[in-house]
Every structure is written in C-alpha cells, then in structure tokens.
Amino acid sequence: MTEQWAVAVLGAGGRMGAEAVKAVDAAEDMKLVAALGRSDSLQALVEARADIVVDLTTPDSTEENVRFAVEHGMHAVVGTTGWDEAKRRSLAALLEETPQTGVLIAPNFALGSVLASAFAAKASRYFESVEIIELHHPDKVDAPSGTAVRTAQLVSAARAQAGVPASPDATTKSLEGARGADVDGVKVHSVRLRGLVAHQEVLLGGPGEQLTIRHDSFDRASFMPGVLLGVRQVAAHPGLTYGLDGYLDLND
Ligand SMILES: NC(=O)C1=CN([C@@H]2O[C@H](COP(=O)(O)OP(=O)(O)OC[C@H]3O[C@@H](n4cnc5c(N)ncnc54)[C@H](OP(=O)(O)O)[C@@H]3O)[C@@H](O)[C@H]2O)C=CC1
Ligand SMILES: O=C(O)C1=N[C@H](C(=O)O)C[C@H](O)C1
Image 1 (cartoon, protein in one colour):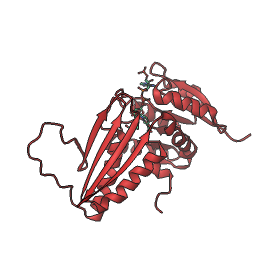
Image 2 (cartoon, rainbow, N blue to C red; image 1 turned 30 degrees about the vertical axis):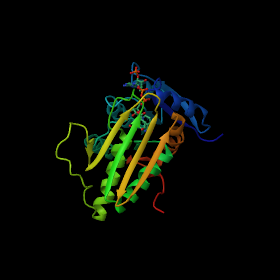
Image 3 (tube, helix red, strand yellow; image 1 turned 180 degrees about the horizontal axis):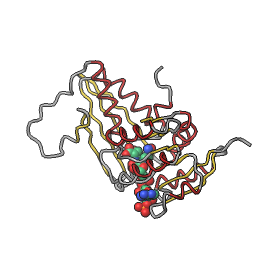
Image 4 (spheres, helix red, strand yellow; image 1 turned 45 degrees about the horizontal axis):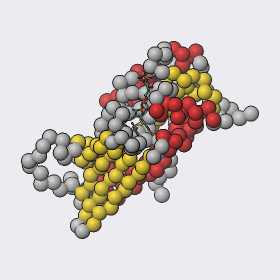
C-alpha cells in the first residue's frame, strides 16, 4: 500500500469544505482523519493525528486555525481569503520556529485561474491600461476576491519591474466606488450575482486594441485538483508559499 497523508478539513460543512472532504476521501494517497466545523475544538486536529490541515473557513477564523496547526507541527493548505501582508509576515515568522513545516496559502486552487493570473501579469507589461473585474456568487463575504488581489499584485509587480507607468485615468469627479478599489495601483471591480460561481477578467488596453484574459470556475470541482496538489506538495515546501504558482513551473 502507498503511504497515506492524514488530512483534516476545517470548514467541512461549507461550499468548498464539503467538496474538499469528498476529494480527499477519494484520493488513494490520503486518509481523511477529521472533518470539522465552527463548533468543533481545534484540539480535535491533534487527537486525529493530522499531518496536513486544509483550511476552507472564513477570513475571521483562518489565521487562528493555521497558527494552531503550525504550533502543533502540522502542515497547512489554505484556501481561505483574508491573508493580508501583515498576517502573512507574522505567519512566516512563526514558521521560522518550525523549519520543517510548510504552509500553502492559495488565493485560487483552479489551475486555469493560476495560469490566467500569470498570463495577465506577463501581458500587462505591454499595455498602457489594465483593470480587473471579478465576478462571484452573492454569498461571498469578502470583496475584492483574494484572486483579484493576488492578480493585481502580480500585475503591479510585473509593470513596476518593466518600468510601465500607471494606467491613465483622467477621472476627477466620481461617485464613491465608481472606479473600483485600488490594489497596488490596479483598479479592481467586484460583481456579486446569483448564478455565478467564480470568474475574473483582466482587461488590457492599448491604442486601438484590447486583450481580455478571462477565467471561469463554473463548479467548485474546478478547485479540487489544486487542493490535492497542495496536500501532496506542502510537506516538501517548508516555510510559507503564497500562491499555487509556487508549486508549478510557470517560467517557460
Ligand atoms: N482558494 C480557492 O481556490 C478558493 C477559496 N475560497 C475561499 O474559501 C473560503 C470558504 O469559502 P466557502 O466554502 O464558499 O464558504 P462557506 O461559508 O460555504 O464555508 C465556510 C465554512 O467554514 C465554517 N467555519 C467558520 N468558522 C470556522 C472555524 N473557526 N472552524 C471551522 N469551520 C469554520 C463555516 O461554518 P458555519 O456555516 O457554521 O459558519 C462554513 O461551514 C472563503 O474565504 C472563500 O473565499 C472559495 C473557493 C475557492
Ligand atoms: O469565495 C469564493 O467563492 C472564492 N474565493 C476565492 C477568492 O476570493 O478569490 C477563490 C475563488 O475566486 C472563489
């Protein structure tokens, strides 16, 4: 028999957590040892002897969950949003105390989305203007999406490195919110609409032309190959990895 990772899912009753429970359960190299919700004690992770904790909870609870896992020698694969720079820095510092432990924070587990963000960053060096529209189901609690924030960060870094100036914008009068949120100098617009799952467009504009890089998750099944990849790889990547692209070779 192949070696099996002992995996616990936090947020197991949620939209993503329920899907992850099924995916882990079906994976031959994984054993689902705990499926926990809000009312369960984190101590159950220790009792279940989890090697890896998959966190798919809420922006309010994810930091405490992940820190508990790390403090108890468990690796963590995190899909939950809300990991701003200060929280990531503090977690990285904690991980320095347990150098064997790995944490993956993946703003998006869908491989197509990770590729779309990487393509957008690359393309954004060649266009005068760039803006992001993210579109999600209306039950989502945070805006802009973690994916849009990550994409804006990648785009902003790529443009800064290439010496591309800020996107032109003559707006001097506007209703608050009309021009979206500013993430590292990139405008991000959030749509919430019944029927949607998770979608994003990066609009790139130059004189007389537009390139649109769009990704659609029509079903949460789209995230599961990335979750399983994260579980299989996290122990081999000690420290903090931000973005599933950290486990992929996207440089060619
Ligand atoms: N990285 C990626 O690819 C993806 C990331 N996400 C992100 O994942 C997160 C979850 O999304 P989604 O599944 O749609 O949200 P849901 O609201 O459907 O699920 C969240 C679940 O977490 C539970 N929960 C809340 N607090 C705790 C806690 N302290 N311990 C254990 N469980 C807890 C909730 O329980 P209760 O209902 O009792 O409050 C709920 O069942 C969001 O941040 C979302 O943005 C979503 C899709 C893809
Ligand atoms: O809440 C969601 O649904 C999603 N959350 C993540 C995000 O905020 O980017 C990933 C995906 O977009 C779905």
